[in-house]
Length: 352
Ligand code: PEP
Ligand code: MN
Image (cartoon, rainbow, N blue to C red; front, side):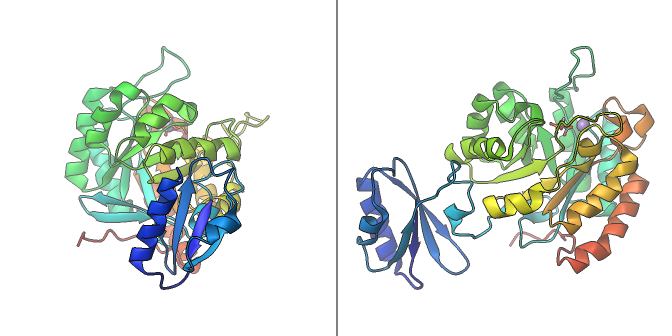
């Protein structure tokens, strides 16, 4: 349920109403929008009559039920107001959100060694990226494939952060590693294969770092948003959704089918920021630029792309990696699209 307050509602009245809801066994979450304050009510709201709750104060404009199964993640929960995720990085704060410029995340699939990760960081930074991505812990289909360098790769990400000033996005696969990964990462990635690892979702929801939640390869949009709801319900409100392609019937020419229709669909369903990953979405570097530009035109808040200094030598996902040169070229090609959609690429801003 949400409680929409009238314009200019006094702070003391909002506090009084919140206390009243608490006494009724509900948990109010105050959302300060651009225009008005909304109280999101979580708990067993089924037995309450919205019209009766409206009587609690003359400052309440309306009490509405959230019809979707995902409550906190729903657009209704914020009365249509988009949420934003601001991440401090050494180069300044970067904000993911519908009303902010495009955020670029780039880097290799896996962190392979110090030289390549630092070089990639510097190259993608120079091309315009705000975040470096790179896996220390890799979820691989085969147990015999390269599994990532683990903890030592976290140290290399820290070195790349230091050298470039970029924020770091890296995957956490195991509940036992959350604290360790969160020491280095500015944003924790929950990968497609763990989208419904509920223990992991609860654990990352109970810590402070923002979460990049990738869509499971066979997940419906409802399942994806319910997974986000786990993180939000555990107390972490900073969630970014990442579409990375889903399984369809043809795998001969593309690794996955990048579902760009999620952009308008998610916009109507949720307030959370959206990222598109055309690298895993197509599986082939040559298809990445077209899909990145399409995602930008369709209104994505952010793009994540795999970039490797020598794709042919990559220990994982080489075929889908752009070279730093191609990445730089793509960023230039995207500029007029970003401009025309009002999503100029983000300059990091010094934290006040
Ligand atoms: C990755 O980002 O390298 C990755 C493993 O992604 P996904 O979980 O989408 O497969
Ligand atoms: Mn990858």
